Length: 231
Figure (tube, one colour):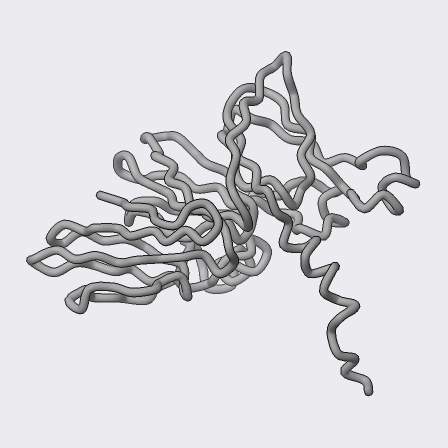
């Protein structure tokens, strides 16, 4: 589909221009504006049973439902934006290809794209940012995934000779050729007092995308300024 981006990278607005009968699946709450003749239907976001789908949605950081917008005979358009200030990127999925995303990064996709959850590892259970990734994959041909960040997005290359370490809250997405290991930022003193907690060591071969801001870090900064509900 034809996609346009405006106001990058701080307040990105993405507009998908749909041909006649073309559809796009959109995370609830992401729609900003649309042409009047689009039809919208709401369904379950992931495959599987009702309970299984609810569990995957909760641990994956995404909604249990997803909205599918379909253009009429004359085509149409829909503009979308993430819930926090930041950027939006497109990833083109080839048949058999996958994309891994941090929970909350998914915003929209083509109709033939599905996603499920992948556990980061036991150590990640103690991470503030969550312990699960979303795995997006295409069914029946190529597809597109549109993912968002808090802040701007930077692409980094991971090679067997040059692994990198990323704060868990700054990793947005990565290709399946990249493997990861959740580990402490340093010794226990650094992990507890240094403000980093757990980090991810990325190795293998492929691309990864990181974001310049961390929503959990912002939330921690704001906590002292929140009113005390007990008073």
